[in-house]
Length: 243
Image (cartoon, rainbow, N blue to C red):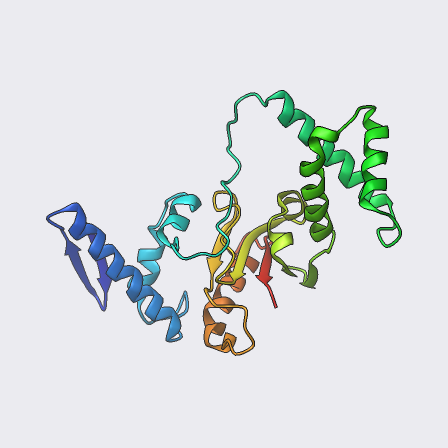
C-alpha cells in the first residue's frame, strides 16, 4: 500500500488487488493534474501532499511516458535508441558512414544551386564506391538533414523553440545541452522518452487552439527545467511547437 499526508492527517491506502491499486494511483494522478490547473505550485502551502506524491515517482522516464501514451497519435515515434546494441550489420555500418558523409557534404554546399544528383555523385566520389543500392536511403536522409539544418531559435539561455525536425535530431539535442522537452502537439509523439524529460500538452496545430489555457503547466515545466534544484541550474529546455 501507500500513504498520503494532507492537512495534518495521514491516509493509508491498502488496495485489495492490483487493479484497485492502479485505480487509486490514477485518481491521485488526476488530483495532481487538477491541482496544477488551479494554480497549485511546488513549494506553496496548499496541497502539500501533491508535492510529496510527485516526489515519490521514481520510475524511469520511458515508464512515465508509457503512463501518458496515447492510442490516437497520427505520427507515432520510432523506438528509442537502445543503450546496449548488438554488433551492427555491414549495411548498418555503411548507412552510418553514408549519413555522416552526406551531412558533411550538404553543410558545405549552397543548397539553392545544387541538385540531389550532384550531391549523390560527390558522395560516391568521396566514398569511392557505387551507392545505387542505397539510393532510397540517401534520398530519405537528404530530406531529414534538410529539415534538421533549420536550427531552433534560442529564446533565452535556457530555452529553445524548435520544430519536429529539431526534436528528432538526437545529436543536436545533446550538443545543445537539452535535458527537458516541452511537446506542444497532438500529432507528434516523444522521440526519445528514455533519454529526456518530456511534458506533453496535447493540442492540435490549429489557429483556434487556446494555448493560454495551458499557460500555467507550461510555465511550471519550463521553470523546473531552468532550475531543477537550488544547486544546479544549467539544464536547457527544447520547446516543440509546430506553428
